[in-house]
Length: 368
Image 1 (tube, rainbow, N blue to C red):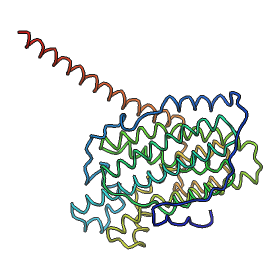
Image 2 (cartoon, rainbow, N blue to C red; image 1 turned 180 degrees about the vertical axis):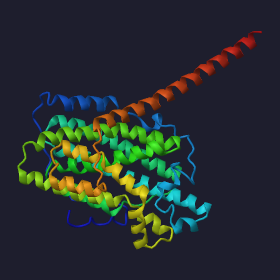
Image 3 (cartoon, rainbow, N blue to C red; image 1 turned 90 degrees about the vertical axis):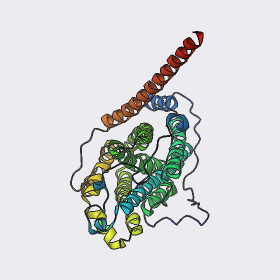
Image 4 (cartoon, helix red, strand yellow; image 1 turned 90 degrees about the horizontal axis):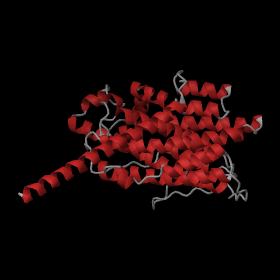
């Protein structure tokens, strides 16, 4: 990770030269049982965002996410006191737009990286699963784009840190780097960010779409763990050290991604003050600690947990490297999405039953 990625072109496109060769596999045997089971689950869990999500749900434009004001870095500062109720509503809207815009850009990056995995990974079983993930990520791009367009009406460009990490991931010729950059770092961070918002928002629509996206993402992280753990067992100490350096630099980039200083600048906060406020914000510091809690156990599991990596995570988490149970968290993600579906189906069945009862009653009245 040496130089920042070039900015998108004026036409709204950004081209990253491919650094890897396409790999065909002629070994059509059964493959690894665990990956094939995950592939089957990926096929079984495909869904339609138009039908599964109730887009008729309203979102308050002055409070799109329904999260506490304490979560905003300006809260408690003199800048917050100068904002009246109307401007505070605009600030909440801009922060929601900034967060979901970065989610959107990250999901498009995940879609492209998943397609790259299909192209470059040597194992046919991994190609199978990555094909289902590519469809998952396309659905997530659809969801976040629609939410920003229809419910918030505002969006932000991709942040420099995310763009740099995507650039470095896609330019690398080694087939495992899209796994490491996307499946472990970006997806792990996204899962934690989605989970925090899912569990704190008071708005049903963002809660539902985050829960459903997280159900997919849990499979993606499991895929990265399986594939990389197997591969990294056979690497030399020097090769592992190169990937550990990539993890450390990537996590620092992701930490910088979480600031949102461009939002504060739009509200009259000078850049230097915006950086200082976001660094000192108690809410954002807690947010960062929780975010890396999903990445650390995954990095340890795939065999990149050297003293240097542990020290980096201690710094990133302000000394609090949590020992989270990643498998339990992912099971919980799946259960929350299934519970939302169960409630939705029950409400639909109740509405249909009421409609049938009403029609029967009308028929009986007509007979009389």
